[in-house]
Length: 189
Image (cartoon, rainbow, N blue to C red):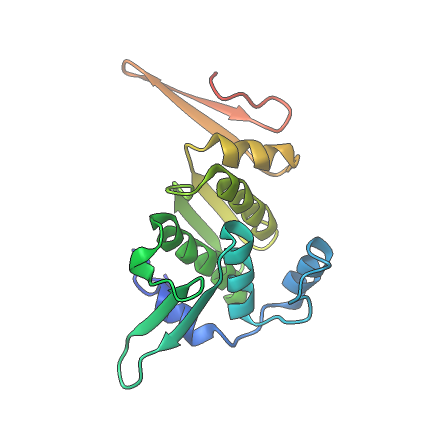
């Protein structure tokens, strides 16, 4: 509930915690996964939000407060106004802030539930988003409802042993649930 029940506090959380430091376990995994990253020694929350946004979309972000107000300016890319960005960015940023924020506060075990995280993202960005989820699952429990084959296949291709995929198929008034692992995944049972 740190981010609001509908995500209304995400940007506020992002701004207030931007200078906080992510835990040593996170940084150890980050260094191992991205050994050539230019932020390998920087554990500031904002730098890792920026890293993942750029990793997934290729664009940078910046956040500033408007003096004497409770409002913020959020910039994507170089001088691109948020109103002129794709909808995928406005959905993606809160997901990254929430997942990394749950890691930052370290309430164990944190659970993050996401619905349709792939919405408005290019297939390549969906694949990279799944890399982000695979990275984060070492620190938080993720429950993701998705319709994206790109997301599912990339996660299962990484042979994530603790990852379970459930496909629900409804015909007439009957509902069947199928469980898959990386060994037996298929899109349509």
